[in-house]
Image (cartoon, one colour):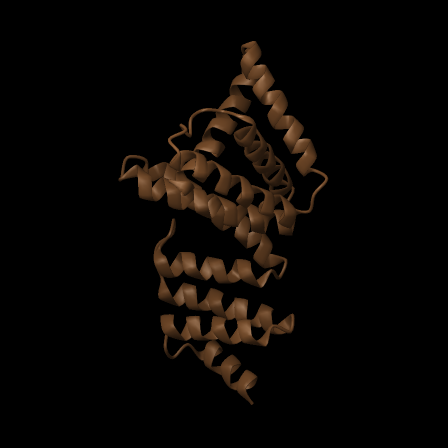
Length: 216
């Protein structure tokens, strides 16, 4: 349910944005959009990592409300804030900001997991699009040498989340993550990434070479 709450935030937020942009919405909807844009403006003053931390906090609050029996479809100040923060993160992602792309990809990853576990095959195309959205965001971050993004892409290919499962492609991404971790001085994370590559493809040449180099 925690993940589904996040998914509902995105869906309702985007829907509300579209309705308000194309139609003369009701006063209550206009007020809702005003609150969302207020929080988007608040988030615009924060770094991408702090926006993500704020979203994690809001996700916890909304999950607690759900457990208390408060409907996840009721928009209140907490959902306005979470949606506004997502809107700002997505705005930066669309500008190919590496950090925002990484955190958007990770946050959206949670949304995709919620869709997949809750859809029961009813929304397969939406689930796939959701995963691809995360993939494209993580690729922007990976190209900016954010090693965690490369590692996450490896996981997507290993598990077949939104993409055709391929242990070889997964291993290639794990090796890329290892190289990026090593370049940034994170040797332990680099070795973990190499082991992930070798678990996927036990004789992966690049993984073996990099492992030997790091263990010398």
